[in-house]
Length: 166
Image (tube, rainbow, N blue to C red; front, side):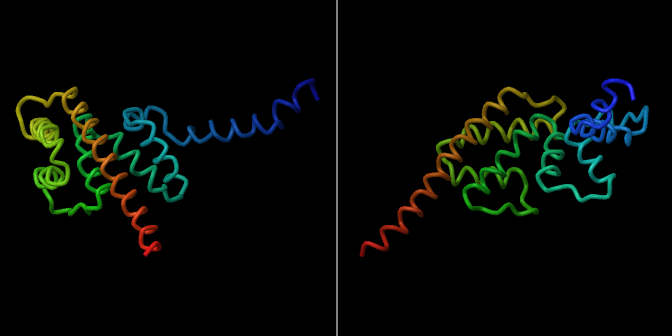
């Protein structure tokens, strides 16, 4: 055996790397669909191609990675509603979801309206929506929703201990 041969072929790190890189042999050469997809979509494809069920977090990641930037920003509305304890209804339109969030977070209603406007402009308008205002509005909404959600949970937590004092 040549010097270093054992280390090259039997060392655990090299075997792990060989297995990992071997996964990419599954993708057919010249597969334009795989080349256009994002990393999460390719990983999800590889996992499912092995006959395994992809985890929920990977499916969500692949879904979000496939959205346009403005559509991804608008998911903040649904995420914020969930954080604030309101379930999203599948029949709910984006405008209805935005109105429900504006009721819960009136202090950021201007940003919610701005995000909704850019989202509708992207989907239905002849001109594309503007990414920067949508992302900026989504960031402000996310921050406020997180702040309010933490306050709600803190009040509930404190309420547990107040009940015991009586």
